[in-house]
Structures are given as C-alpha cells and as structure tokens.
Amino acid sequence: MIMTNAVMENILTRRTIRRFLTKQILEEELQTVLEAGLYAPSAGGRQGVLFVVSQDQEINKKLGRIKKKNSNVRMSTDTVYISKEQPSIADNPSIINAFYDAPTVITLFVPKDFLYGPYDASAAAENMLLAAHSIGLGGCYIGSAWDSFRDPFGQEILKQWNVRTDYYAAIHVLLGYPKDEQAPKGKARKEGRIIRG
Image 1 (tube, helix red, strand yellow):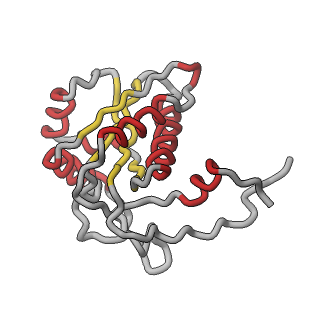
Image 2 (cartoon, rainbow, N blue to C red):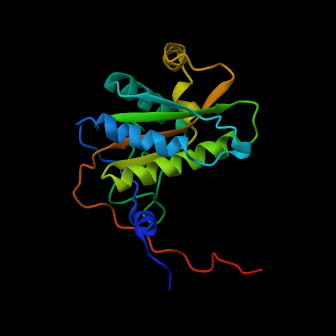
C-alpha cells in the first residue's frame, strides 16, 4: 500500500506521448515547464543545464530527421518494442522525424567538462515532463541529443542559437497537446526490482 497525493497521482499517470496536435502550446504553459526544469536538483547546486526552446516547425523537422538518420536504432520485433500504441522510430521505420512533429522542442545542453552534466539534464527533463503532464501537455524524452547536430545544418543551428562551444546537447524534451484523447496504457511494473539490504 502506498500513500497517495496529487504529486504521486501525477507520477503514476504520466505517459510518453509521441502523437501531437499541430497547435502550439501557450506561453504560460511553456514557462511553467521551463520553471520546473530550472528547479530540478543539480550536482553541487551548479545549475549548469542550458535550456534552448525551439518552436520553429522547419528547424524542428530538420533536426528531427537528422536525429533519426544518426540514431542507428535497432528495430523492434513482435515481442520487443517501445510502444504498440504510439510507435517510436525503433518501432516504425516509416517515421522519419525523431521529434514526432512536436510543436515545441526544448534541448538541454550541459558542460562538456562536467561529469554530472547528463545526470543534471535527466533530473531537469523529468521535472519538465511531470510538470507538462500536470497541466495537460504531452511530453517525450529523447536521449543522445547530440545526434541531432551531427551535420552542417545542425552545426549552423547551434551557432544561430548562440550555444556555448563548451556545452553539448544531452536531451530533447518534446512538448505539445496530445493528439489522442486517451493516453497510452502504462506497462505493468516488473517484479523483483526492489532489494532490501
């Protein structure tokens, strides 16, 4: 038996969304999600994660295609897959945009020389996804974000965004309004994952 409250309910009901409406999210919704990211824990309180927001459909589409091309994902099988309800790029080879046409893409950049940068970005991304869910947005976590910038277009975008050269892209957080009224079903939690020492 677990204790329940609004925070736990939000955690237990959040799902990854890969199908988005084309409508852009509201500015106050974006600011709410960003604030949640800014308040995530960070090693030593360094607050080293940089958040770059792109709501440019063409840029997001191109970077999403570069990400797909550079991902080298192993395709799913009938028994091993990411999602049957909302397929990922590993589930469906016809999906060419690894950002799933999300109207807002936030890229989390971390210092190249800081060991805990990726962990700080992960904590921020989780805060953002939970905040997004709590206000009715859909969200998706995309790792290995540096793949999206591994070509001349990606490098040009980094310059356009004025991203510091001593930082690299760790994670993308995709945001938008879910296309489907019903969220994907959650997978049953696997047994035997908690060990008491």
